[in-house]
Image (cartoon, rainbow, N blue to C red):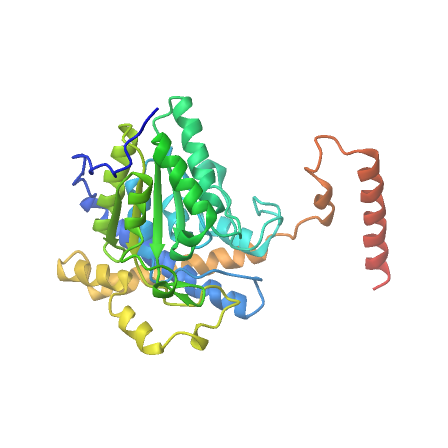
Length: 358
């Protein structure tokens, strides 16, 4: 069936239903995400977790997006979406359990730290390869449509992923078949050490959507309301059967790409200092104080309360028992094969002897 190649105009479904009555709750979520980020970097430096991917500077983009979605929508994160997980109601301790790989880790220690997933919150496991979640989100959206489920899927990725094969394949397929998918690009200016301007000649990343026949939208990722409205509009379009939208939330990555990265080797500090002038958490904080919703005292209390919550969760996660090493043999087959049983018994004996004879 022939399909027009020109991008569709944005349908008049834009909403203005930002939950102003939940603005303080939104702020608390951003603060909690920031405090967790700071502590997790410290935990990694102290050797208490093995790896971490910071998100500071991207809180408003993730929180605004999360609040604009419905609980039934499925999320396909990259690996920097901790604030999004908090919006979905993932407990702080559950995140820390995964970072530490203890016995309460829902991924049973079989994923990299920071590659968390939560079925109940419709939060799919990330993968380290760049962009693979993009095509997965499109496939899940097509499946949901065939089941007549009124949901959308959301693929999260950074500016670097727009140069990946899966970006092209996913957006092209979604455009051809009007998949109910939102492509949410957090353009934080750096693909590890590669600056955005050296990666593509397009003026924006959002305009790449035109090649696939659907709208691309640029939004200030530091403005939680702007992000919310862009996502709500995109979701309404998708649910109405008008296809996908590519949203480019322009943010800045304050910290390193990961705890394995040293941004001082490639990024000038002046740029970071300038970006921090638009710190999304502090911008919302200033607005709330200006409007009388917060005072300096009540704001300080929020930070202290949430700092204590994170501290208690760390203590609880660190005192949770380790995984049983024999769990390594579970879930390989529905019923363990004789060969696997033999390997398990051999491993158990070796482990037991190792404890007796260190």
